[in-house]
Length: 265
Length: 78
Image 1 (cartoon, each protein chain N blue to C red):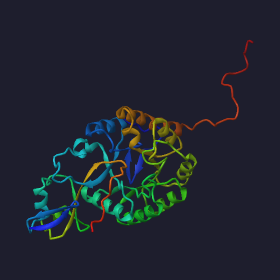
Image 2 (image 1 turned 90 degrees about the vertical axis):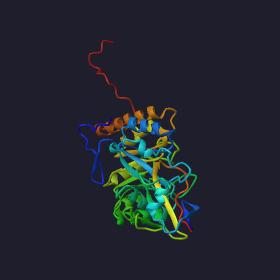
Image 3 (image 1 turned 120 degrees about the vertical axis):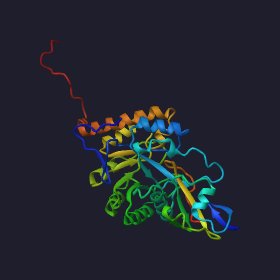
Image 4 (image 1 turned 90 degrees about the horizontal axis):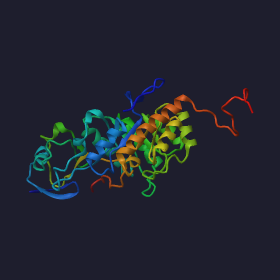
């Protein structure tokens, strides 16, 4: 499981502390059992869920994911996956809050384009304002524009989540300098969300100083999801420790590691 | 009988059914759900006292596994 390094503070979102900086989505797995095992291997404490119509009449006894998971271990983060406008996103969050007995933490995403699944920045800002005004704790998916990220923070979002690359693309962090700028200017947790493909991508994000990472496809679409979940768990910890340790500077030329005095040749 | 739109499907019901009655009829009474009628969310405490009327647009939703899918979102029913 995840441990907070000695010189670190736990990830704190909306006043609650978490030992794990890896957040995981629950979609795209083979079945509920694989989902359960992957989540466990990941060490994640926050997991995202979607809100959808109940199957009526077709299969009312179909095993529901939430019934297969040890819910006391996880904080559920309902998201607005698939929403392309403000109304749908806000409506989804309100339904999620009702469904989960007043649970206020939500992940907001308002998509702008079906091919890239990039967030619609203007709609996202509007939806965020409405949700914050209604008392939600909003973690918000956004692009890597530092101005938009800061504005979402100013609106009152509890965490800002810039994408590394398009959802499900596995391309890794496309623009590390933008992510770095966002992190340096932020007073709320910054979690990279979307586009991570493999363990090194996760480590790189943490080395930039991200407070956490959210991923789904990187684990679910791996050949061995449970093993990848374990890799991601370690990568997030390794990246965080490297960040806290403070890396050496990059140099143009070599710098020998062994002394010259005492050479016998 | 009255007709309602239930999760996008035309459905016939006995008149004067409550939300509780409907959930029981569907075998959903013990599930973790949210119910919306004509875009208004019905609190759980009001399921027993809220009746369904002709032409109501009802959505019954639940939490499912999801990261980011291209599934159709809830559309405001017309």
